[in-house]
Length: 348
Ligand code: NDP
Image 1: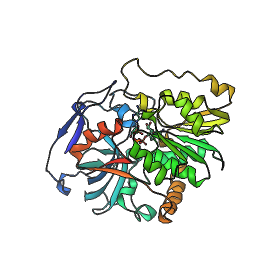
Image 2: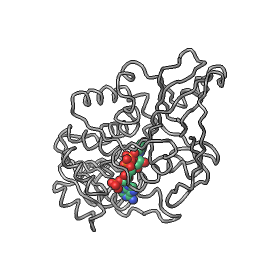
Image 3: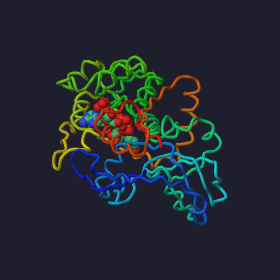
Image 4: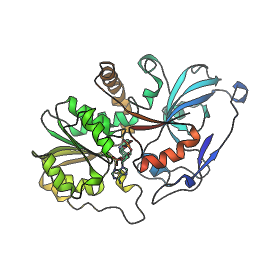
């Protein structure tokens, strides 16, 4: 199957009606390939919130929009099943940031600039030495986002208080564990009781709560962070960010990672943050980042650090796997509404 954008969705909730699923049973062979082309069987694709912005169909500062009738693409990993490129023989495996939501994909590797733009990498050395789904999981883009955002922007010091939102998800679960390993007091928020239990029992967050069952975020954060908030890893933006701003300590750091609570608002309905003067008064560092810009400088170090932690049994990473590329649209819709538990991936 191949999933294409049928109808852009600039505002409101995404539905499966925004996509077209084309079914095909054809397996590409070498005869289908031009010089320097490879055919890849998609094994896993990563389903991520930033794709929601691309599904608006328009280009933004964050990412370019998908075009109507074009395949949706995202991070993925797969097996080379046919090849006319000497460096990527049949049987090797690749990962790319632009894997079409398609059971089979053909990539033209004639132009090195295009290969770089696709972040197309052959799995070899330490990258070949780990389970395949790690490339969309514990070594994937969201886990790297957690690692970079917490260490480089959060600048954590043992004993400080860290608040994490969307804490059981792809980014959040990694932030919580890294925070604990660095000696922080970790306070985590998530949207179901099951997620909250996982945060407390498995990831050992010091406190966790179901934000959907709380009337007053400011009061709850005050109770759970008696010494104030030093670091906020912001995955959701909106009203929760306002409540954090009401509880921050002097020189707190906010890693502005995302604002998923706002991605599906109707036109003109995004939340206006009210407590921004707290950034001034408390000398808060409020820093956004886009992880794509930090691969070259930090990805190798991240892989070394996280691989060691996992192999030492000190890092869990929960995947939420749906089988079948044809189910990617529903999986994306569900993830945007919190019906995932862990990192959302689709198995091809
Ligand atoms: P998750 O795996 O956490 O999945 C999304 C989760 O968001 C849902 O499970 C749900 O969890 C939560 N959510 C959905 N709607 C709302 C809402 N209205 N209010 C609060 N929470 C909501 O996603 P990721 O970990 O992949 O991404 C988390 C954030 O990180 C996103 O904002 C994303 O855009 C951002 N990001 C940024 C990157 C960067 O480079 N800056 C890179 C990667 C991700 P729950 O049930 O707990 O509500």
